[in-house]
Amino acid sequence: MATTSTSGITSGADQQLNYLNLLITQLQNQNPLDPMDSSAMTTQLAQISQVSQMENLNSTFSDVLQVTEMKYGTSLMGKQVSFLPDGQSSAVTGIVTGVETVNNEVHVRVGTNSVDVRKVLSVSDASA
Image (cartoon, rainbow, N blue to C red; front, side, top):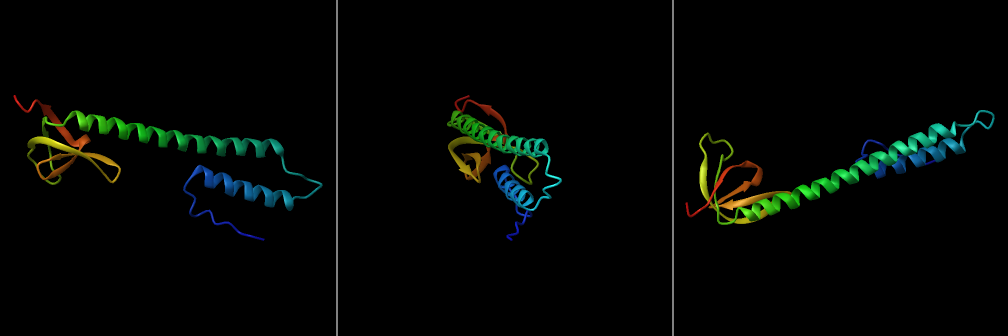
């Protein structure tokens, strides 16, 4: 009989597969005089399916957020922005010269700094 470790479960799909393996094992070893409740099995399968669908929805929202941040970063090209560098108490101002993705986060290039677009404090026209 194969054993399945549940310590490394990372997704709803993994949970669903592990549950189905467990269910098959339970069905193979159940007492024929006292069979498992089929409505409980159906409820559990529906709940696991919902978890998987929520993970897919979260992933989709994450993708939409990244596209939105990339568009925002692109709209900052040539603009003057202010941001607070990590560990510093005063804001730095500069012109956005590029947009890049760093560790799945959208950053704008300001001089030699790579700034997360969520850390931009202010935006103004560079010609002002």
